[in-house]
Image 1 (cartoon, rainbow, N blue to C red):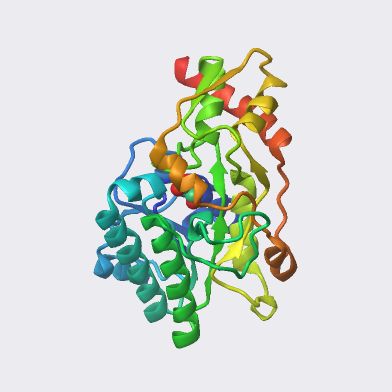
Image 2 (cartoon, rainbow, N blue to C red):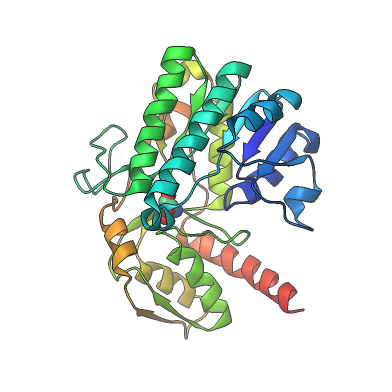
Length: 320
Ligand code: SER
């Protein structure tokens, strides 16, 4: 992995992954692309940036060719709640973008990464300690996209020898770019509201467990997987990874260690609750640990402390 093209570079993962990749591999080695350009954004200002609509396969190929990349990281996608509201758009964008990115990787002989999700599981999947290899019959459009994506990436590996690799991310928590349209986003919103209002009303119900991970662990996981010795990989698309299985009350309790008066209430959104209920409570990441040494550094307590400190700094700066 020497020269990398990233799609969805201004999104939730991209905003931080670009900066991390530029730190590790050099600023000019990472070509950030997104459908829009933001003024005065660290991603845009710190290295090469190109406008790219991922449904435009020709442009994706041309950009990858012109910049002579050897790796494509395809992040551009709609998240679960948005995909449920606009299923056809989600199919066209999520699957169309993926197949364009895989084609560019095939033609230019690039290594390839795209994230899958806990959304690739469904109601008939074992809910606790969900195994790496198990039933995948998701009932959301996002989940259908993710399972299809996993299969398509395996197909490109088996049929064309493209070095495709992926992880099933849990909900990702970060203070940098806010997520948009996800089901796990409550676990990000809650920190903003804790600092700004001292209270949060959760759209996900009490006792609803989902896996989560702090963004620094997610970025390290991507790099570790891409650098992993291929001869050690039994699986490819995609590895279960997680750092914690939590419900809203757990996050509230962790926040109260820093903000003792923090108040949590509920106003459950039936659409996102149904999505959450169809996903696992906790997934088993043993295959990722054994095959490429996956390890998460942040548990709920450590993440909460860091998140509150960093977010306070960011919000203060915005006010100032
Ligand atoms: N965070 C994503 C979502 O909630 C799951 O992959 O849609």
